[in-house]
Image (cartoon, rainbow, N blue to C red; front, side, top):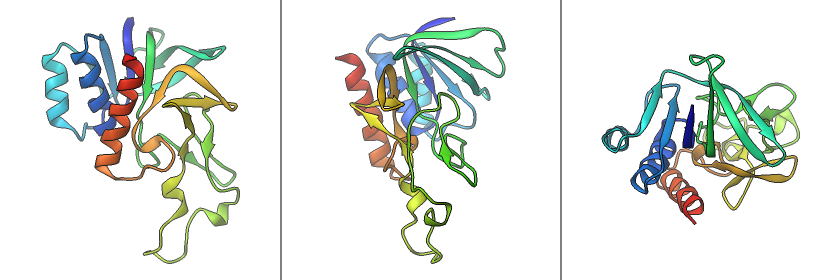
Amino acid sequence: MKFDVVIIGGGLAGMTAATLLQKSGKACVVIARGLSLSGEDRGEFERLGGTILPGDRVISGTVRGNRVCSVRTERLGDIALEADDFILATGKFFSCGLIADMEHVYEPIFGLDVRQTPGFGDRADESFHARQAFLDFGVITRNGRGLLHGQPLENLFVAGEVREGLSGQADAIRQSAEEVSRYMLE
């Protein structure tokens, strides 16, 4: 299936970007693994003719050179979703946008570059009330695009909490989605 934009994640960042892009005339699909936190945007997106794949999740992405070609989802199986542009808006740890093990923190779909501390013991402070280092972990971006091996992927934009330095701040999450939408429409 071919769309103008595939948005991976149906939370605040994903639905904000999807709605803005759908309004601009882009044909968008949102892959929403869990519940959308942004019901108002979701309703508007659907009224504008956007497509939502609720309860589905991306299991792999194909990258050739410096471009994402397609993604595959659990429910669609062998049917690939292709697009001119992709947005990664999967959130951090709770929503599995980032995965942590004893060795490292990683982005599971494309293997994007992730900002993190080098040692396991440096990820968190013992004091519950202290600012926790892992909150700032995230996909490294340049001009809104995700980096893979230090190079930006030309058509993969990153929005919301999965992006380095963003953590639970609704205004910042929405602003990152708006910024990504502007980059895509230039």
